[in-house]
Length: 196
Image (cartoon, rainbow, N blue to C red; front, side, top):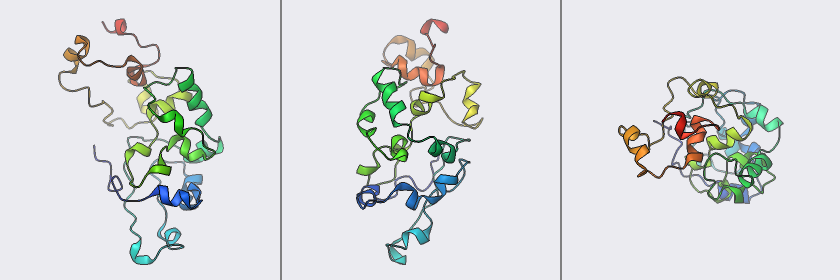
């Protein structure tokens, strides 16, 4: 799937956040954005407050797999960090959390879902929310019907592990799948015996 020109672009959120900038100072459209197709990248004039014209290059916004999302609504509700942290602490977070928990002690509501920016010198998908983040609050999973609540009908949602021979390989035990991660797409009440 194409992710747009912005992925891999050299930009240091680390340096900008260390200057004491708040996310919405540069991403001004985020506070009123109600559609996923809204361009939330900074406007060039925002950058020109500190930078010379020749050193500013803003790429096209990246393409996502979402078809519906409202930054405005989520920002009005405040930070999701306490909810995500609680899900991790109680074992109900639907994927292995890795180092996510250490990023949740933030007062910045944006960084609860867009984690690791304070260490980032390049724009990558790693700073995007994980589907498991969304499912902390949006708990209704009824595949394939609930997928279209957030994703386009033609979205390529299958993970890389679901290759051509996945149906044969997954039941062999060789893939060492984490059942919690399967629940992200297959639902919280997913059981192996439900299909087998």
